[in-house]
Each structure stands twice: as C-alpha cells, then as structure tokens.
Length: 367
Image (cartoon, rainbow, N blue to C red; front, side, top):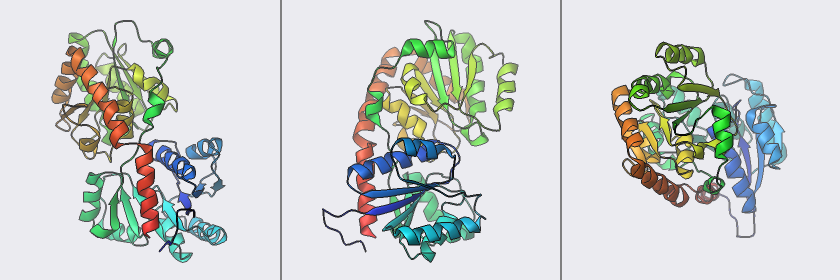
C-alpha cells in the first residue's frame, strides 16, 4: 500500500503503445499533465515516432522510448521490466492494448510493482484471454459503465473494476473558432448546414449508415455539407459508396487531422454512427464545443450523450432512424442551440480533467 502524506508524491510510469495520437493517447497526455500539476512524478513509455511521442515531448513530459511490436513481443516485456527496476515507480499504469496491457502487466509483475490498466473498448474477447490479460493488475479502469459490464461478463471480479470516465478539456473550446478559415479549409459555403463525423474508417464506426442517411437528406435538406475526419482501411470503400450515392459534392473525406479541436465548434452537428463504442471522445469534444450530437444508441454512447438533452440517440444500424434524427436537428435551430448549451454545461460539470485526475490519484493511493 502507498502510505503517503499530503507533501509526498506518487511516481507513476505510464505505458502507451498505440501508434497514432487518437482519443486514448490524448487522454494519457491530459492525465499526466494534470498529475504533474498536483505534484506527482510521471514517466511515459511509448514507441519511438509514435503519435504520442512528439505530443508528450512538446508538453515537457519525461519520455522513454521502447519499441513494441504487439502482444507477442516478449523482448519488449523484458526491456520494460528492466526499466521498471531502474526507475522504481510506485505504480505502473498501462493505457492501451497492442502489448501495453498483456506485456506491461507481465513486466510489472516481474519487477514486483503494483499495476493498473485502462480499458477503453467495449468489444468482447475470449474469457480465458481476458483472464490472462487482466490477472497481473490490481485494478482495471473502465472508462464507462458499459465497459465495466463487459469486464464483469469476462469474469473480472467487481472489486477490481473502477469506472473513471474519459475527460475533455472544456476550456480549450471556450475560444471562438476561426469560422472563415474552417469554411475555406473544407469548401463550406454560406448557408450550408454542416455535419462532422470523426473516427477511424473501420466497420464498427458505422460510416456506411451515415452515407445512406445523407443520400436522402441531400435532396430534401440542401445545401448540406458533410466532412468525415479519420483514416482507415475502409477509406476507398466508403469513397466508392459516397460516389455511387451521388454525394461527391456533399461529402468530403478530410483524413486524420490532429487539429480537429480547432474546427469542431464550426459545425452545426456531429453525427457518430458507431456500432460499438467505449465512450466516444469525439462526442465529448463536440459537446464541450457546443455542438449537438446524433449517434447510435450503442455502448458507452448512452453515457456520453444525454438523449433529448445534449443530442439524440437512435437504434443502432438503422439508417432510416439516423436520417430522421439528423433531419429533425436540421429543422430545429432552437433545439440545436439548447442542446449545444447543455452539452457545454455537462462536459464542464461531469467530464473535467481535474475530476478524472483526482479519481486516478485516489486509485493509485488505494493500492
């Protein structure tokens, strides 16, 4: 147990092996910065030239680069265990999959240092694999109640599960965005109703349902402009679908943008048609920026969107229902303003970085 008084610090070694600077790695940077402000020591272990590597260094975070090829990279576990013995942290916090959880837990056990792991996805896995993956960890942090339920179904004991939801830097969205620059960047004309979608272009993000819904709306609710942010192996397939639906002048595939936070407030609506979602960082950011959300009623989206208050939730995999919800939002300016204001208020009250960091500190000290 970490016996500490108010003047002592906790030393946390964070392990994040993701290649790209997506929602999860950004949460790690939020957390480390907040922990530093509270006087705690942090070291980040990540692969060289990964997305988080550059962002963390720019933020002044102490970084140790260790290459990780995935769950079977046992040399990574050995190198990490040796580094743990050298640094002697009080806690190891593993933040991602792709080796960080399975091998990070193994390394922490070998170095005899208490470890916790964050789980950000709600997909299922074999019970045996889940048992092996989570056995080394004192606590498993679920970013939503939905993920906590999945962990219980996998056989993880309830007393080892803690729910700490992802956070959003609401203050960063308090600055008025450069709407002229946004219009110029994405070819938006005066009077266009603008929809944003943000997420990897992979099946579970459900972009095909968005395109089906927009195909009908483009005729009844012109002028309409849809900008899809993100990359993935479905890029060409989704582009072909958009073209076949005659959406060439309506839908733009903008790719992955690490400056999305600068633009999100310029849109009228965020549509998030994910079929499975841990919580949905893009949804949290949209709400913090005052942008209402239309999403499928899937996974943790039930927690990130308050139906009828900050956005609308519809039946999963139902393009017609998605179309109806988007249509109602286009037609009701007052509802959008009300939901946008409610989203800002809720993000500041319930999803602050300060709250998230304090919950982590309490967890670390409880070990």
